[in-house]
Image (cartoon, rainbow, N blue to C red; front, top):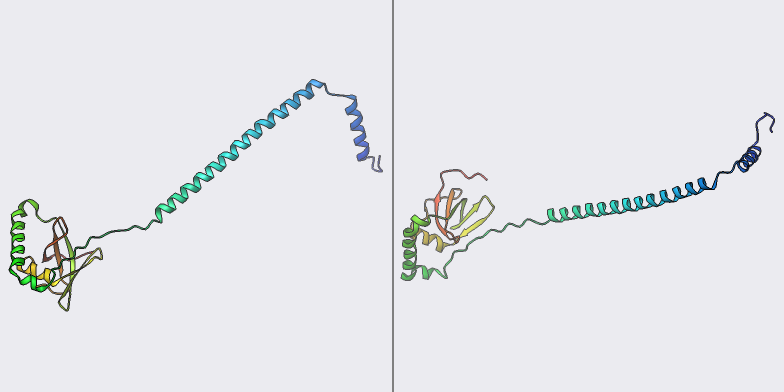
Length: 192
């Protein structure tokens, strides 16, 4: 014992050893405790393994979903627009009788089918005329340049308003195949 009447650590350890040796636990209790300890360890280990696998699988699933969404949203959205180019081989062919007859026949066929077909679709555009070059710009930023031959052919068929000026809003009539059937002044303003 120390000066303050407190037992020292060594004395306490010696007393504990004596008491433990005097009162031994039965073997059956020791066996039960050991079995319980080992069975608890196996179920805990199995549960830990299952939880690790579940966390890994959910993390992999989350990463794959994020990658799939990023790939899907980062694809460039491509919009295709069809533009028909109208031209004839040269101006000499336009004045020939065969070309006039062919256009006159097409126009007659068009008038005959007008009741059943009508026009396929219309677009509104702003007309820009510079150096006798007609350009039509739609709200879709589609620019169509009309050839002189097309303007002449539509003039002969009386399907174009020749009183149009640069900056006027026009309506362009197309058939099913995208061929321009006529260009007329629009009375409603173009709003994009």
